Image (cartoon, rainbow, N blue to C red):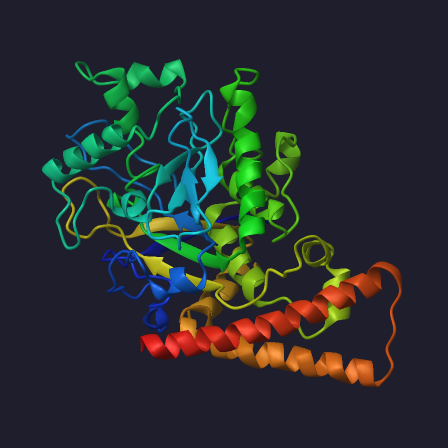
Amino acid sequence: MTILTATALTDNEKMPTCQNTAQVAARVMERTSGEAAPAASIYDRLFPYHVELCALSELRKKPGFGAPLRSGMGGHALLYLHGVQLDPTAGYPVLRLCDPGTAPGADCGVGISVNAHYRNANWVAVQGREFLWRGALAPGERLTRAAYHRTQDEAKARDILAGVEFHPELFRAKPAGMSARDYMYEISVATDYAAQFGRSHYRACLPLDRARMGAIVDYLNALNQPYRAGVKTYRWKLFNDNCMHVARNALAAAGIWAPWPAGQSVLLAAFHFPVPKNGFVDLIRRANHLPIEDPQALYEDAAARNALLTHGALPTGPGGLALAGGAIAGNDIYDVARLRLIFFDNPIFGPYRFHFRSIFASPHYTDLGENLRHFSARFEAARLAGMRARGRGKRFTGVRALFQEKYEAHIARQGDDIRRMLEQLGDEA
């Protein structure tokens, strides 16, 4: 039997960047010590287009202030897209790639959130990594009521819910004297923006190129279009249309893995549906575990084969890193003690808890330098294996020959890229 199994997050401090998480290791939920990602981090410069699949914990708001909010142990998922921005002229959530002539900075990124609140959108987007995670809170600042109100005011000034309508029944719980607009921003905080106010998180970082990021942008814009046009009304469904369906299928558009079917019958979907913490583990493993030294095994993986033939790239490669971070510890608004986040897995024989532990026990999953050196050795082994195969006169025909050609070009290109990145990383040290 497969059930939801819970693991608490106890690291209620600050958020590390993708390149500074080596110490997330000894215990899975050791406290972290970094701040929110800086505007021009080495990771952002090496990988100007990358995604972060973010698994967020439950949410527990303290009583007596604003709308009472609590969420389940299944948590929430955000998909952060670096190198992407909102179209400021659209008056509705519409994405576009950042200018290729400018190196994407911290504000050239958007966080995608799917929420049961929306009626004319499947997702909304928040511009800027800092505001997505910490709202208007300064580094080291306590989350007081004043800071909470300041973040709400900033969210309204940014008009992050522009063009988005909520289901009318949600307003039945609106406190007396609060406007409908204020209530929309009130019930969105710590879920759609300022996520770290009340939630701990795990994040899986995966580099992409501009073309694959463009495929994600096209997919997400198309997903929202029928709701924007009024052709459909969005109804969130736990088993067959939740936040993880959108995140996983957006990544499928970039060739990371096969799409996850949405809209299945409840009886079928209830036995196998995506949840955020599983998705975090799945993406870290996809980014690190494909057999890049074995082109025949890659060819037999349909999603990997299609990724290489379509995009000339594979999901596994340098930069697939894991990080963990806690909710704001100095907190007057949310209860952040032992926030829970569950797996959907067999509690005895299921693999997810073991995969999860291994991620935070191996530095190449959490430290950029270790990761680059790890993949330098793997891609060199792949290159040598290809040379030996050619030396034995191995010949292919048809699609397999085209795949082999793209495979060898990808292996050579990645090897060169890793050497360049290691040089840059050394310069930063």
